[in-house]
Image (cartoon, rainbow, N blue to C red):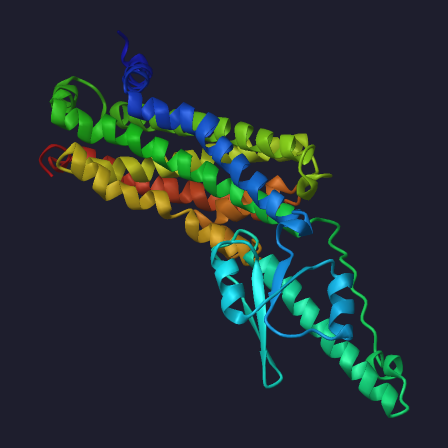
Length: 383
């Protein structure tokens, strides 16, 4: 076998080992292709059904006091199912889920009893608030009219009109912003499982020591393991991206919240794949250096697991409306997550894309330098 083909042979060996390992194969293919998309689609379907639920699902409200005509008028306008009774009777009905909420009145103070345990608890609370505010306005109007004043001239001194100029649905944007986190998590886990098997796993099996005794260049061994891990991570990322986006596109034709979702352009798809490759290289390098330092397979698992939750931080930043800028584009993990969110909405800034790509490649070289140093010392076997 020629020396120049050694790295390729090592890559083939590592890929074969990965395919034989059920855990890594499950993480690389099954989870991104089936589990996460199904889970994500289920959550979105539930959320959409809650947001667009019929009012009859949560409009049964009890009243532990005598309602007057003005109150009844507002009740009819809001199409509330009015249930009357004593406070104890209504509490019993509420506990038995016969009503969604009930209201008491003592000394001009309304108290709304509801529960967050109910799927539509917040919706019922909002309806009760609208009811009381409507009643208050009706009473105020009567008082002003009695004084010879015109209520509309007082209540409507100023009017407010809102216009959303974003052109995009906020709910849809928020959900698209979560997609990169799911993809990156599976990518990280795939890289972790593959890297552990290629380093700590081989160390336990005794094959790593044998491999290091062969007349092979260190660069061939490291390069083979690095490229093999990266390939596994890229496959996971691309499969996750395709399946998650497929679920979203399907939902755009069935759920009201996602109707009109913009399709990804060819440019966005290419940029996403490039970013997956760059991120896979970074996480593979980190996983290899962390797993190589472990004394056993179990220790390697424990030391690398914290990597899996790192993408959660950028997700929260994205949900808070944080946008990618030149500074954030230099921060690993954060830059990729926020950039993928922009790519998902076809609003990627090419300047930030280049900064993100270059910064991640720089970090790859830094981490790989540590890997080379580790493999050239006895620590790789006796750490």
